[in-house]
Image 1 (tube, rainbow, N blue to C red):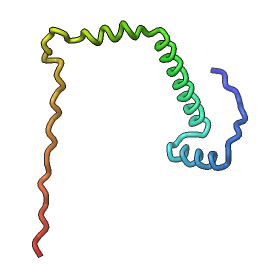
Image 2 (image 1 turned 180 degrees about the horizontal axis):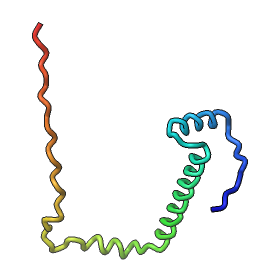
Image 3 (image 1 turned 90 degrees about the vertical axis):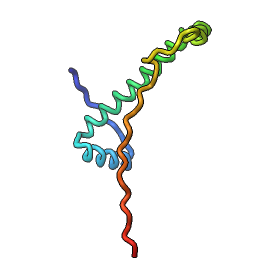
Image 4 (image 1 turned 30 degrees about the horizontal axis):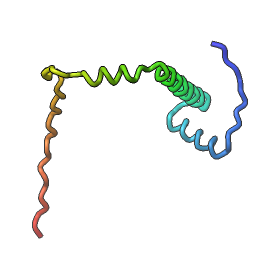
Length: 98
């Protein structure tokens, strides 16, 4: 992997906060900035991907599919949501009478 240097100018308040965060996260400024840039690029690529997919969408066709889903079909046992386990209740402690 090729590495390069880049002079980054940050506001002093941002740099101070960034140093605190990286120390708390036990990482370096360089690693933190690399991960932050990678996350932002991934978010932008994801947005572009969904915009491109939306441009090709067949909304009338999708609505037709949704309108006919389940028509004439009895719900299957697997269609039901599982019942979450009951939480155990802790007995309330009563304060002694004064």
